[in-house]
Length: 387
Image (cartoon, rainbow, N blue to C red; front, top):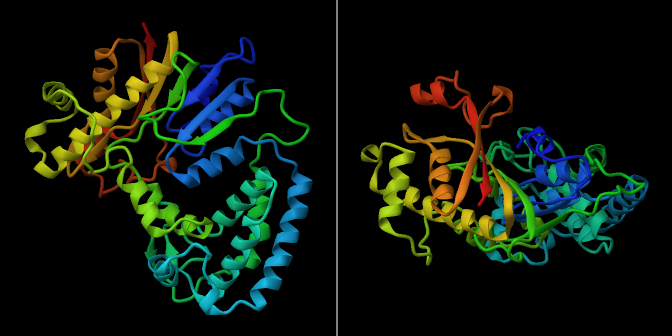
């Protein structure tokens, strides 16, 4: 999400507001809201997103982190010398996870990453620990040059390219720390704004009290959105997650093809689908995906309405999408469901998407197709008021 979208909707400091992003991703809403002097709360189901957003929005003592990073690297280097290939895995790794790591990482980097991960995991200061985990993750989540044997990890399309990684973890770690610190917006002395709260949680079931937030600014996932967890898995397995645990998270994300206990009238689902696309041209399998997406978005909007104060605004930054040549108007789905449960439309605005910032094929690409070329140049910003 563009920070300006958040920035332009919040007054500077006063009156201080409680700002929620229930699908916070890497934390743009939290950082922009805190920079404006407001209390920010975020949730996400992706553990790496939670880590990154929490670190990005935290108060950072740059000198302390630089010293600790140097100490961590020295300790990890000492440990790696005595580490056998048999033991070059995270302590929590089961057989499936070890097989996954052996496929994606060469022997040198497995030993170095094991030593780094173990040393970082033993740190006590939560902010320093989070920042160094972010630096660790930057070694892996890259487009071309990283410590894994894959390319396009940051695009969540990892494919094994190398027999030997082009760089090693120990050489790259100081540079990764420097990059993470340079991006930290809240350095000591501390900001006057309240500390942002980033939580692991589900937007469909928020752990917040009724009418407890003043404004919601969020960007829901769109159908067939970038599957970030697919790439993030290469980093998260070093932080204590098993492949099976990450598979479970991924399978129950918004829009995933899983059964859902939530009941919703078939007529309402059909009306939403009619607004989203020409349903006759959609396969049975993709109809199931669309139905699940409608159910999930409905649950999210209901939770947003529950936690939002009366007359509070909810801002949705929505990207439309395509599904095997069918143009999917996610924005129309959100508009229909929000108005149905009592939100009032306040404004609709379209914002051009710069081609250089898009992960999907740009509209000028031959891979885009006619519909994508003509209609995937923008995102829709919907603002509702709770009435």
